[in-house]
Length: 98
Image (cartoon, rainbow, N blue to C red; front, side):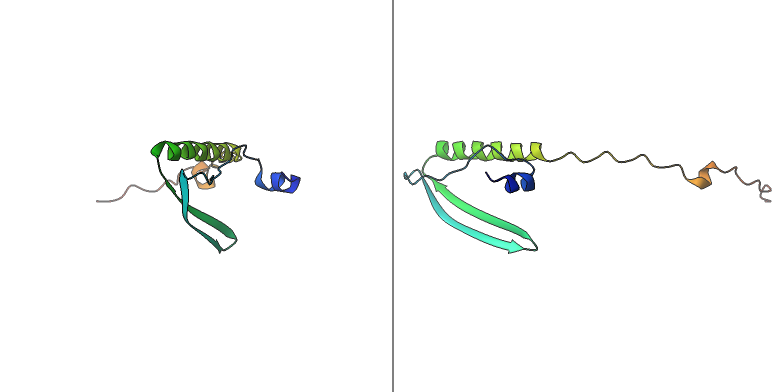
């Protein structure tokens, strides 16, 4: 894998998802879209057995887990500073008259 792709993605996921032409799975359709700098590829695959689909789902789960683990954790939020008005002495007002 090229170095610039590795640096861009943050981490290279060592998992593959391949569709073989052995008849166990058939590519039904695919679509590709680009919008606002995001690019999406949707693939629809039809399987002859649930076992074959299960293997591919497991591989996709591994890819998703590796990508989630590769994301940088967000920094913890900083504690809120006390408000300046809370640090002042309360005003002494006369008792309300009834």
